[in-house]
Image 1: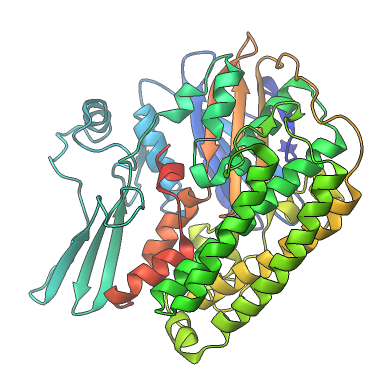
Image 2: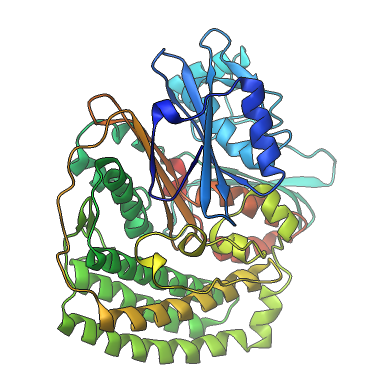
Length: 503
């Protein structure tokens, strides 16, 4: 059954296949022209777990949804991962959340829960039918000359907690395993119920640097389920805020890359320039992260003609400054020598892993939600896709540079011609027993929210996917064969979210 971004479908209309048919359909489509965008479980009316898969048809701007039931007695199914690596993390998540075993999964181990979590120990006992060891089962490389380096979970900087375990031969990384879950918040079950005022606040806290992206996705799910159509002006203000969020984070990342390459002038310049864009969000919303702007039914803060004019004047100045400083960064041989050839992911590997966002586009994957699954303002204003060719740190930096310039062009085009009208219309009650989906191109990449309503019109299940869910494994993959001293630079080139992954 096909649906579109921002669309809805009655649960009774979602095709239910046998387990064999479900698996075969996913593999057939993903080996042709689709990709696995989401795979998750939720309780069916019979008390069984219903697995639902959402496939992305990037060239057709469509989504295909299908499902199957897993009996509570067997609590198992044949793994997709052994034939489709894109399913790797989804199946580990399903195992954790529902104690269902994907038979034949080649890397079945905890995704977020640690072995000292009592509930997690019980889950994994049910899955593996054996006692969980006291420590996380890290992959280990044998050999007298192989050494192991552990970093984190507590770090010296301001970053969030995560553990990195390197298996090295000399300076060469043979394998990197990343353990997350230290910030597991249980945010998906907190979204359930009918308290939308609380839920929208939670959506802004999924990943603090992506408050606009995640709250927009949440609002679109509620608006789809309630049949609420927001005004063109509200759509425009959401798009403007999303691009300001993208600009602030991309520019901050270029500064961090300059720092790790040892080129301090651009680090200082970009650090200051990031604050300029955060201050524009502050002027719009009263805070530097855009919280409180997006609500089901529209936005709570308006942009009048005076504010739009002031923003345009500042953005023109910021664009000139950015071009000068970015030319400085991308023209220095010492910087290019550190960027080029480090952390390479080929287009074939990127597709196999399922990379999304700028990390995928740096490896020639042509997918941007604003283009492939356009909704709202993006249906009327085209933003050219930004691609890299080499899949390395240089390509990921270059994609950021291209997207910054194109976001600035978009803002300078939209701000002077904002549509008139109201900015907020309260959303009504949500349609019962219905699934709705929203895709948003956050600054890291593809955000997906899926809401499933119950018979009373509240959320029975709410599924969140941050782009970091896909891309953390890409970072580990990119480090194979690299020197361990390249890890900080390569890590910054992805700049993934711990909080967005841990949920």
